[in-house]
Length: 91
Image (cartoon, rainbow, N blue to C red; front, side, top):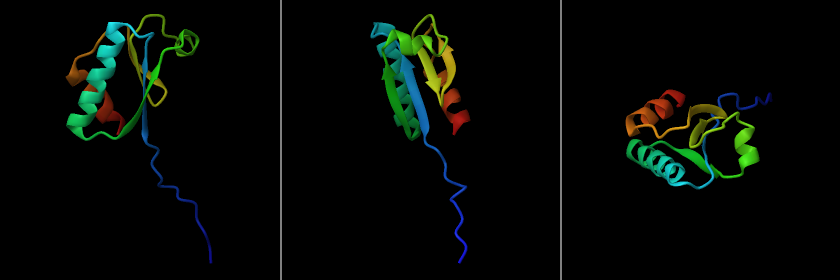
């Protein structure tokens, strides 16, 4: 019998909210979670508050939205529609 690795295994989406805990960062996290819930998007959401970890992404202004290790938005709060577009193109 020949065994094959599961090459069709889909890696779940990973979302990171970069920010030190300011109101804008909290708003981005809340908006992102709302968009996920409203659109049935399954993903892991992590809040990154360590400034050194944030700088590793080349982000100097927060908040920032990182999807699957790619910085999609930085330095502003996007609209819910913009977050939806970013998350649905990644699926």
